[in-house]
Image (cartoon, rainbow, N blue to C red; front, side, top):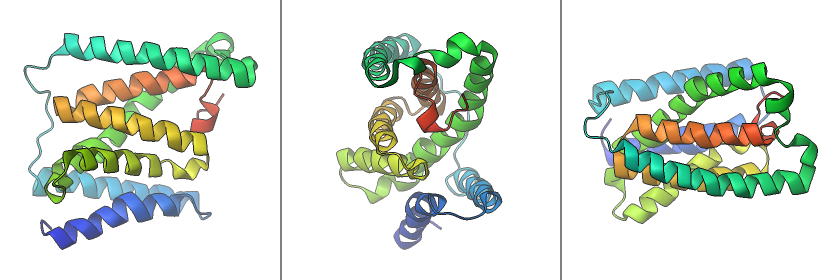
Length: 208
């Protein structure tokens, strides 16, 4: 399971073939089943093969993390607010203002049941499992952003692919610096929740 060939095939299946297949038309139950089996496999590899321990690392520099995250959020907030206002201003903060209970519910479900599993797969697993396959760290991070974007291809929306590519770059760099699934999950949740809040949730599958 630790040979280069095995890891290469594993990478191809998990990060290329499966996301592309999810964009195809077939039973949603089968897609969910495949996704669950794949996630169980990833957890097994992390715990039993890679000997990864899930724990909150000591010495995390929370003040630096929040300072950088809030700064990036402000930039993202300005750009996305302008985008929604210019393209469809009726969507601007629509769910927050008209369906606050749904807004709170979706933010909770998204943060814990979507973001965290994604970060285990695309950051924790990817960085732990495939770092040795790349000699160039810049390429390693770039590929992570590419596959993270590809993981959203089932939305069939070019803007989603662009946003998730840049999001993938941000999250990969955060994980590279912190080596913390918790911190990168918080960052991911903050930006994702903002997109839903500002009115861009529809293209990302959030119910409105």
